[in-house]
Image (cartoon, rainbow, N blue to C red; front, side, top):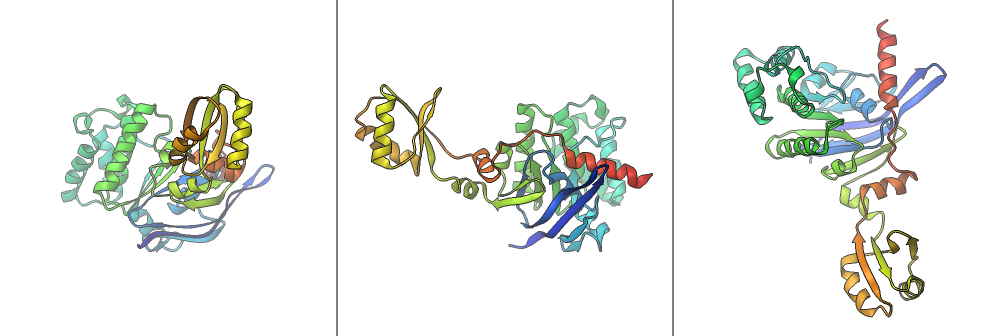
Length: 329
């Protein structure tokens, strides 16, 4: 399968008041055409900085990247024509209507007049906004604004659509709606989707995930393959005699049995669903409850980094803004 994004040894260092901050450290990866590719990591991990470099909004300190065959440094205009971008922070003009926002975007991308109205209507219909197209955006809900931003990002028919934390700040129901639209896009459009998120459930939708922390990619694979690196399933049980149960399970199956007071005992076992029926039948102690939990991406992240996903301030984004203000003075 053809790669539509190629990234080699990207490095981004910011100068700060106290010295230097490395936001992206020697990052290399590729994204296949038509793939839903995810960047999973906490705020401040380097996700937004990497996307900003790929979208030609930032220059890398070192390294190279091509998108749709165009070099980000040698041919930035062609790169911008090849991509759509839904920013992490709202970027619509709320003083304009939904249609006017799309018309302005169409002008910026030199979409021919004969195609403009057709494309705008197509996007409004796809995002279920046609009935609200003449309303001012400031009256829209957060979910409607996000849908309009996705419509705007698709208007010029890009080869790659970047979605930087597309459900940030949305309630669970609206997040689910946005994901339905994203999945529909993947099914209907010949487009590559590049997503950043710190939500584990969203990362599960991706074809492949790059796990990034402190500016470094520490793992890259499919969600299922990443979870298989954890090991087996976790078996949780309660018993009338926990001490006896722990001793017997340890002796018979040669596994480490741990205690979790609210849940009872737990241990790891490959192919948990197949293991449980025989385990119940063979147990000489009384089992009062038993359940299974499969490995999650949260488990993967914890194993790889030694900590859970942090909910930090988006340090890289703050540095980018500071850098931009300083540069434009």
